[in-house]
Image (cartoon, rainbow over all chains, first blue to last red; front, side, top):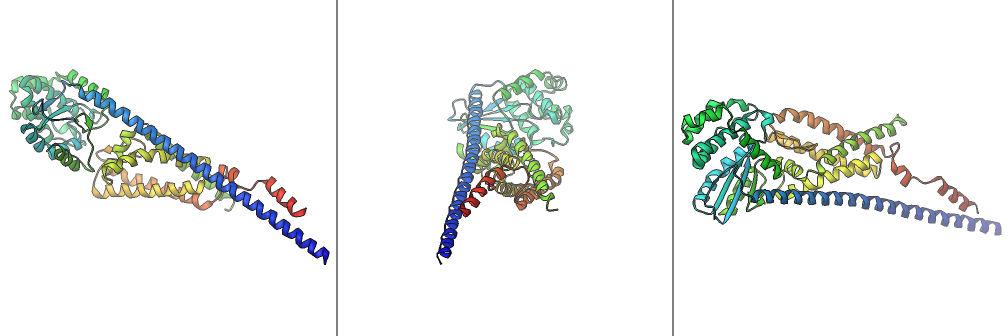
Length: 247
Length: 167
């Protein structure tokens, strides 16, 4: 009897110890998981923090650079307009073409009403796909110099209306560029030599360097009153929201 | 087969994890490009795209590290599998809508002509990595995982238990 109860007490004690052991194990397990999860959250948070900081820095750099006046573009609207829009674009970039189609008429109207000054700054982002961005931007610079900003703006519009696809940038030839320039109001004899001879190749390089120095990473990049404007899910949304912000 | 599975699990873990680390690492220093890449899918509203673009590289990096090291392996494998499902859906969706973009999987992103021809291969790649993630989640214990150090009962613990039972 007594040996029986002794054995029972021993068994109970052993069970208690095992339970305590299990409890310790469980606690250690939970603490370990919590520590690992905490470490992961810290890494994710740190990485996001780093990205936000980097993004702010990039954006600041861009906004500083953009507020500086550029000689590599063409502007419409009065200089003292209440709003100021800068659009960086590449003549080959399909989204730029879409943005042009979706926003050009409204922006021109708003500029005409004196509500905004819009500056288009073309540069060469996509010449790795073909020499079209260089030829088109060069042609733009030639027209700007020979025939003035109004004709250059018209020429700029025509280039986007007749934009070649990224698959076949060579489909718009130098002759085509000359024809569009003439259609825009340039005198053929003024612009043909420059367009065929890439006379403003340096202008293109400088405009591109300026955009790169500003930290432009893609086209189109829109700045509204010195801040990057990217409010929209699609290019159409973006254009609609931009126009709405200016109305 | 029983013996081979943990090793297969290790292989799947390291391959998938390495892909995540490369994918996350390439994007983490280029937040603008990453956000633009998310935006190019035209699936998310702008402000949400911004957060996804910022958070995704970090999450990818951590999931990758967890898989390679074998820390909280099953959880990481499940997150990895969910991400691959999301990517497959996203690529299928741009494909179906006829949008041609660089998938932005390893940095880059944005419009790209002729990208549609790459979609099947991108989906196949993601499906293979999805399968690898599911394998890791299913195997439970893979070889050479930090989890074994963290969570397996240590031999000395077992010794004390036995001792306790005897005294």
